[in-house]
Amino acid sequence: MGRFVEGGGKILARAGAGRDVGGVRTVIYPGSFDPITNGHLDVIERAAKLFDRVIVAVAVNSSKAPLFSKDQRQEQIAEAVAALGNVEVDAFDGLLVDFARDQKAQAIIRGLRAVSDFEFEFQLALMNRKLEPDIETIFMMPRETYTFLSSKLVKEIAQLGGDVSAFVPPHVERALADCRN
Ligand code: ADP
Image: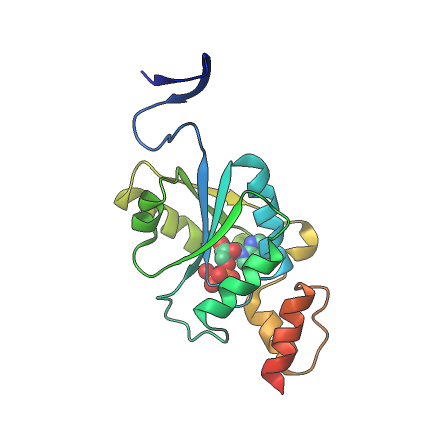
């Protein structure tokens, strides 16, 4: 049974056992975001409608050598989500479930573009559930036009002088152009 939190005579929230902090539903959206793309932003906007608090979390200990530093990636994300009042940007370098627990998050969001994403994401989600059974993984699909989009592809196109304006926000496009010069 949950516990009712009183506030000014009104029931504000039902705080159940675990991570229901004053009724605030928090979700973590982890990834490399090297750099953030319009596909990521599509997922973030969808998550922001479902949750009270969305934390976009830059993974620092990724085995991939990133093009942009952790701080650059965080700044690029912060600028891209500035208009969304319930979205925060953070970074983590340990286990995702530890970070999620620290943030009192109920769930992790992952984006699914195609069937090819599924196998790895499924494995990751089940492993995270094993590590922390109370945190759910939720999969979200972006708008169809973004299903072919990946940070890796965007970097390759930009590196070769191609136009990436349809795939990333303008400030990221400029940062990619700067890398080329
Ligand atoms: P990775 O963890 O493979 O480096 P990213 O950091 O780029 O992936 O992305 C983080 C999450 O966002 C992953 O769940 C990934 O599947 C998802 N994602 C990446 N690009 C898109 C896109 N275009 N549309 C929807 N989801 C995406």
